[in-house]
Length: 376
Image 1 (cartoon, rainbow, N blue to C red):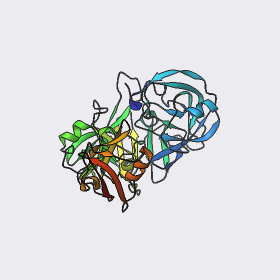
Image 2: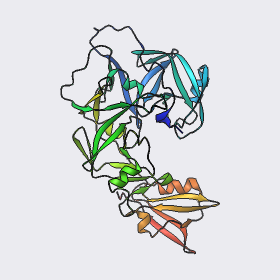
Image 3: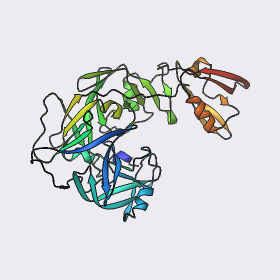
Image 4: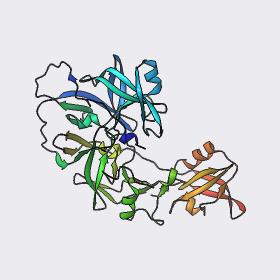
């Protein structure tokens, strides 16, 4: 099934929209404010005159999204249904027509298509998202220093001081969705191709095949286990645009995603440290390190993951070097006397906290003591 990043038609005329009246000369860029809100970069939009509303800029999404409750409140006309996987929800999702969508007060798109989701997942105060067509249609720059998105409808920006990268502006031919930005980088000195995703919360994400080739998917290398067999681990070095980033956390997938176009993705925690200038027609990206630093990112310090099995909770994975490993816990151990919400809260406790966990191991019950500390 297609994912959020491989959905049906994004915006049929993908931001090939009319230009609003402006006072400055034609060669000057159009300018719209952007902000960092939580783990997202957002821009203000209006929908048929309602707004401003905050929409996340999502270069890893082939479609634009809207919260289902907002689509209903605005009484947007429904145009059909698309079958995609979006925000963790697979199946059919309603598509709505917005007669007049204005982005940042500078770009107008008539009859934009938005796909609705119930549990949006982008955070409080964010009403929707704008997919990859925002960046892959017009020459533009995301300037995180100035908190500004600049668009050139004529001419080209001055790339002085930027590092040029040849990128692929690509799409999956079967989907017809907006194209993605795929750029080169290196993990521990090995060149890889990365989808650039401004809505991804991971620093860097690697497909399982890539992680195995790089020797990162092993049973002895420290990692924090996650849902469905995913892992968080540290890589020694990520290079992007020739700039080294030391020991970032990486999400290692248990499977491969978008493997036909990339080896993984680079998410907003990395991308926000660069100003990004893109000429999609010539497939050229310029990047420049800015003044922003990486945000704080935490992982579950317990180092174990569990699943429900009938009325019990069973440990499914224990990370090497973790507090759970030090406490002698193993996959298959049963966790006793708790509920899922309480257990999840305890296992995601802060550094320095101590967790007394009743378990059954090899037919015997005991109390496992976990001292939660960073271990990656």
